[in-house]
Length: 318
Ligand code: CDV
Image 1 (tube, rainbow, N blue to C red):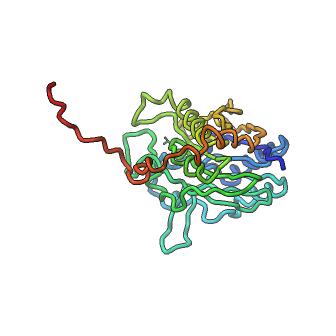
Image 2 (image 1 turned 90 degrees about the vertical axis):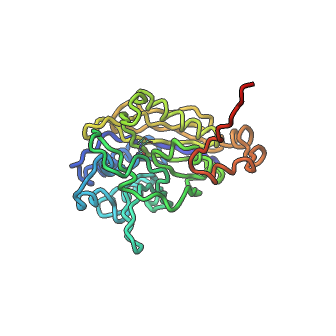
Image 3 (image 1 turned 135 degrees about the vertical axis):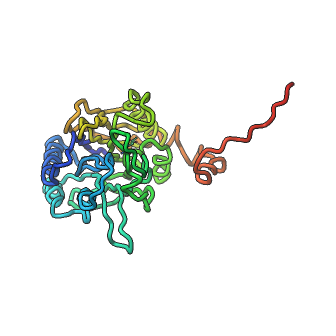
């Protein structure tokens, strides 16, 4: 059985605060249809793909805040995307803000789902690494309030057998952490689907702004190579409500090579035919975990959260 998969990475240009779900869903459907025309079996959309990147603002109006979240998926407004996927027989992965009212306490997650070509949800992932801060920073042009608007994941990094391979998801800041890929790598992942919203301007380290693209790619290329997995990463980019967001969406091979890259700062579909069998070239040799890993030396990775340098010792004079 061939394990070649035709995939699309659907970068999105800016979404404004006033855009309706219907307007955004129409853009997503257009990209899905282009994916079908270009032979895609699976299309990956960005993080929080249904709305503007609202964590840039401290908001007081709870109705407005709640308006950025989905209470159910699909909802009446997003159902057309699921229906079109089923008609076209194209699966997709999409990020959105999730309002979970199933338990005693309302919880809010930065979530993505994998949907099959039959329009049914295969799996759900909730963002593990929430960047930014939870307090208001009035002196910043744009804040990054993910810790204020979202709860951290309660699900970790599951993988699913789907589309003939082993697939997992991660969201934006997750892509910068080697643990993200390795936890899925230890479950044999062959394709990691990622969406991101990365403002170019970082008020904490403005002297790193010119490195955003370099850092974006280096983490995903390393994660792909060190775990023998494909990575598809879709950006929401361009001038969104005055904030410039990084584009350069990519499809990365298990060798770490970029096999397709977006060139615009707007809605754009990039595609590739990926052969999931080539993951074995890395998994069976250079990063053969069973043969070469030494987990007895890796305890600190799960035992310790922050770095603890060794104590200073008096080196003496001589
Ligand atoms: N949405 C994100 O997670 N963005 C972060 C920014 C804040 C650094 C990122 O890692 O791209």
